[in-house]
Length: 320
Ligand code: UDP
Image (cartoon, rainbow, N blue to C red; front, side):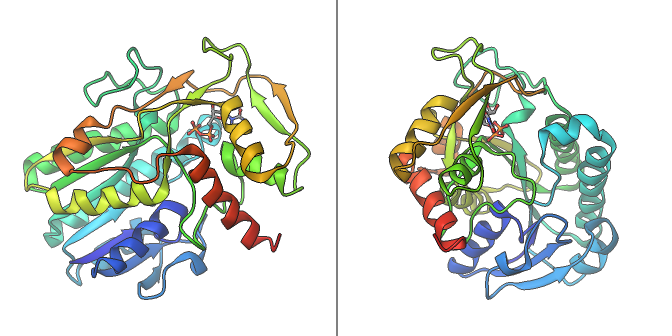
């Protein structure tokens, strides 16, 4: 297939672009490099630098079999302070994309949705049928796009899949997390192990969990990427399918820090800090639907293995 990967210079998008190329697809990456890195775009992909809202019509006019839409603003804290950036950057951009796909008859879409669409869950693990009540603007914008996709699929025959990511981590060889403003737990903890920061802050020790810290479901970036390939294969015209992607096992912030200590051999000092706005206490996926419908089987569910891959990537990048 000839596929357009928006956000293919970012962490998840570039890993997915690499896996698509390995599977024999033709890949074009569209990215404005606002947060991505051109050297993360895999060799073999054609790269177009541009703002989706401005160039998407011209790009899709070439003719594509599908779009994988990763490009987005994705910082929860920033989304609470600057919501306009998220409603414009995520929602308006996605509508431009959907309109261009309709105009040019692009048949398939795979969209990066998020566990943040559910908010504080009423049942854990979270199934796709759970109510959606985002606790932050980032999650609200992703949910709004999911709703838009549902109506475009029904009205215009789009074959669409939204994949709701839980906590993506790990690396794929030389491709890993390289955010200018790092907010994610595992890369921050590894910065401590590397000597780039003195300690890790634990955002709250008074959550209603066994050790008082938040619980998340960490999924390896290559397992996540592989679900996108399966989603493309299983998409049906006129349908919008939604799948959770996680391992179904939760780890607390303290357990993650302990695992990082084991993997790196570094003591990693930790300091308890106030809770972070918008954080739910527990997010763990039920990914049964992806397993049943797509035949998706995570191959790298072990947390220590996920951290090891992230650590190898981090050390290689910093020559440590
Ligand atoms: N977290 C933390 N300290 C940090 C960064 C994150 O305690 O420096 C916590 C955060 O509150 C959440 C978990 O680690 O409970 C995972 O956060 P992350 O930002 O990695 O992913 P999110 O779950 O927000 O998508």
